[in-house]
Length: 437
Image (cartoon, rainbow, N blue to C red; front, side):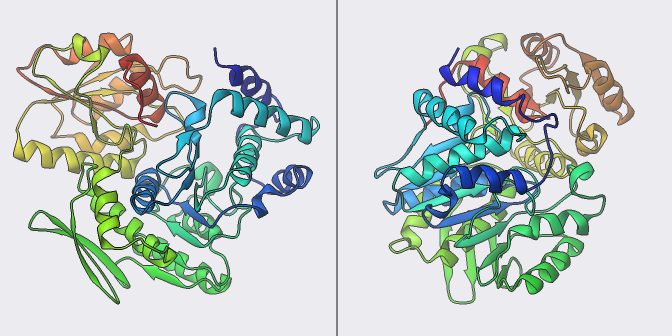
């Protein structure tokens, strides 16, 4: 067990609610720590429902291609908590060490003095301390939930970014798309540029209203810039320039939009030395695990017959189901194979909303209960929901059992593990292939 695990477990007990959106506790603990949030390099703050992680990794890769050092804060993690805090350094950064993380957590625990504070808040405070003490050119900061009252919203950003807004976490953010968009738009700051990805009309209109009230100038997809695929290339165009770029390394048609958001944000940042060549290299080197990732090796491959394709994706809401199924359909059009889903979800999500996009595309679904997650949805309930969508379903007892079931019955199937980042993390841990730093 890592040294930090004991401290992380202890910090979980400091507040009775896992999620309790407020900035009061962050203001208190950051003041006790000497306001590390005021000692950060220029911040790119990223909110949205889907696509945040991909946009973050594109921006990091573009900046690092220009020789910049880039801190990165993301959540949740896949295998190890340390993945959330990446310290920038010349020539490429690295995930924080367990020893350094343990010392930071204990320092923040002491500064908090036993007062109520959520797990995400105190670990975000620890990240701010880490970033404030290590020199870097930029910090890319991903929102945990919402935006307006998220623990990360203690910074004065150089650029704010809002990726696609859709329905998720309605119990905290609101039942309508406008209400959810209003919470995301809470990261927009007076005089600071905001880059807005492709949105449904209701969300875009609300973001524009919030930006006008905040005094934040916007650069909006489809109005001020656009990105699209043409002749096997990514074309990006804004009010000043047209860029002819390679397609992203990350697969899936939705990555064209995510890449466009990243390019627009980098151009608004106006980082010295980050031009078309660096943006192109960033698109080709970006890696973000469990986002339509092909698993070509590792321990789990031995459970499948030779030649079976194995894919992994952590998308977990209705919008993610739409874009994931569309991307798989693109792959199917080029290389037809029977599609078998291995599916697990949390009971805080909308399983019917997620799985309905696979009706007519997936031949069958193997469901499982995500091991070790108290909010895991029962595999039997998931199987019933899949059957209601007209997809043949069966229940497995474990990831290993699910893969063996998925790999039998059809000739050379395409197996997609999906439905939860928590499930994706367990898959990567079992697969025993180290994640790139």
